Image 1 (tube, rainbow, N blue to C red):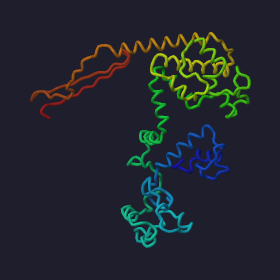
Image 2: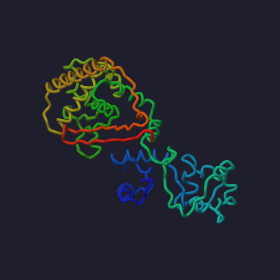
Image 3: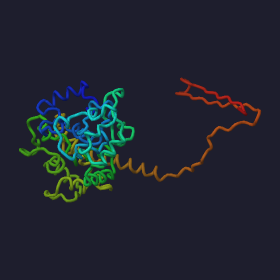
Length: 359
């Protein structure tokens, strides 16, 4: 979106999302955002903050409003005096003197000396260099890389959220349940409340609790069927008080021990049971989830015990081998061979290297 404004897919997005808000995607109302568009917009805001313009012919880059000297410097922020709206919109090429240097006569008095010195070390645009383009300002070569983008996002994360993720990461259980717990903690499950918001249904209530809205917290904590299941399992949940915040309740009970593992598995199966009722139309069976939870917990426990035995097994001794080619004695010829066989005799290949010594 930042690099090719004329692409077909971007034109489709503009027709759908920018009809009433011009072309400035960051000023759109929250109510106009679809579930698909929200993450795109969040990523766009981060990307724009870390990209800058690579000036070539200087026709597309705004001299004052675009970050083209580096990703942090916008010349408009350093103006000494006001300039006209026409000058503010001028591209970089308009601030080049016919002699090929920067138009120092116009620039002197508009910018401080340190910015002028910085500008003096930058080549002026030339027509034979092609069109201006945006580059990723984090990496020196200007190429976008997920590694550097991840670092940018990680630095912007809320420290509280980071602590919550560390607590979830310590949870001892299958990754699929860990991912589910993360979604539940951030209220990202497709509950009836969320389905109503997305216009998937008109009824946002819980099937078992008349008139009560079905939220993530209600499904996993307050539904009468859920409470009955917790009671039948005799699981000692920390801080079952109704006034405790849901996120705090969840994180407190997700501990890195067997009880915490059991807690996460119960939540996972509560959610699966709800999906079978809502999405597949299956009737609620109080005994069925209990049997599945206990069986699944035994599977996880056996897998963890098996993994610990492997970790505690005998350590193999490591021996360093010299893998470099060893030449033969002078006057001799050495032949090295090797072969590769796939699936028995179905496919095979051989290689041969012949070298004389001395060369």
